[in-house]
Amino acid sequence: MTQDLSHERFETLKREFEAIDGDGDGFITEAELRSYFPDLPPEALGALDRVADVDADGRFSLEEFIRLTGARD
Image (cartoon, rainbow, N blue to C red; front, side, top):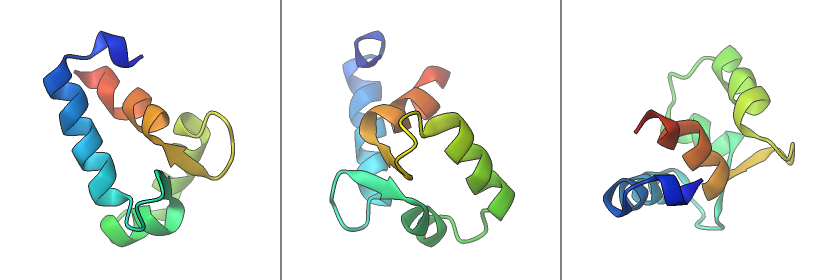
């Protein structure tokens, strides 16, 4: 997945991911998404879970985040 992105695009997405990952544990949780995007409607969070959380662990890894956002490169 990341091999399809330019280095610049990967670094941009990584910085965005790290900005949302409030506790710096390498995962974005629903609480961190709500904190970073306070106006995000609950149904949008549900849709993100269905589409992006491929391993269904309730959080998003950098790879899942890139899969969701990087495909629009």
